[in-house]
Image 1 (tube, rainbow, N blue to C red):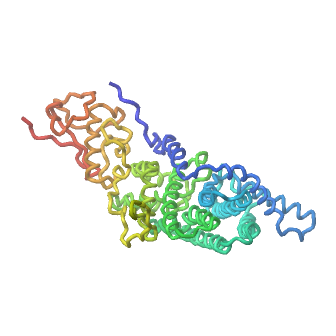
Image 2: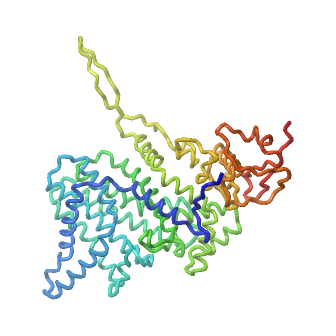
Image 3: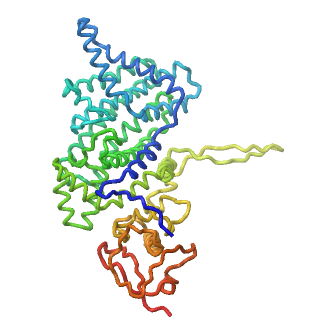
Length: 517
């Protein structure tokens, strides 16, 4: 029986394969896209063109006619290049919340709400333009960065500043009498301030590898990504619908979404594929504090001091050899990349965790069924009762094992070669538990399944280290699900029984069993 070809996440050159990158790009990004709205799609083009026209002509009436035309044309070019072309996930999220809370909104109210919510895309454009200048980016959304356009250069900063100032003006013009106008403007100002502070911390973290740790990474994500990517659009949608009850819970959930989103963005940047990501990959040469740099340093500091020192010296250098060598070291531990891919692609796990976090907040009201009997009439109704101060569920009390959290419909078997390969080295042996991140039970299960898969010939491209094969006859067959190698291994396969060592990464891989009679 011939085994099926195995899809490796790393190609022959040590780079992540297209199979991995396409999987992430197609499956994960879709999780963050809100359900499409007909109202959004029908009004989007009209509202956005109105914003562009107003932005390009606002406050230039004091110039001569010729200068007005020049300025207006330049601002329109900037708007078309920098604002359009995004996925619109932020504005769709905010508008979906507004529609959900205000199902009876009139056409005028829908247009006003969409106008305010689309200023999120304008604010996003200002952040991207400034970020590209600071990072020295080459491409963004599949196009050259705005400051790379001939004749623009550092003037891009002035354009970004003008667009940022226009956001508040557009909101004031659109909803001058809205009940929560000041709260909406306050949210915009806080988002700009918080994101700027997060950007500053991100820049400081590039100055030394001592800042590359998950504590620093979490702070950068919460301030630079979570705030304007999730909390800002959600809170704007809530304010427009005049619903402000759960804003404290929204901030906590937004931080969780933001972490998920930023780790995914780090993965895409790590792929170093401009066609796939639409932007230039520059995290390694800039010494950015990313999920991958923090994880690599965490692993190397515990397992390989020599490579740890080498990686510290290479990471953040802007020459081609240093970038290639640093990337090679990170790819040597690609098992954690594959585990990350599994976590990111498991939508059920992530949304469940976020839902549990929301449900354990103290301000959420629980429902209690109450029966009231009056004569021959029994009334069944629900009563809202305050939640106890003690959380109902703390996810941290549960196992952090990747396989346990994935909640697979069936247990892993030795025929699941694609899953098993994610925890294996190139020589066919299993990585130790400190690198796989599995619990003790799942680690033993994976080791057992890998052994059976080798016996069945399911890893023809894996070359195990040489060992004594005296009296050993190689089999190429499948066993049924009740097969227990620990009870029947010596009887079924006389000679040497090997096992995969889970403690020492380069220790003895095989042991001879005692004679079984």
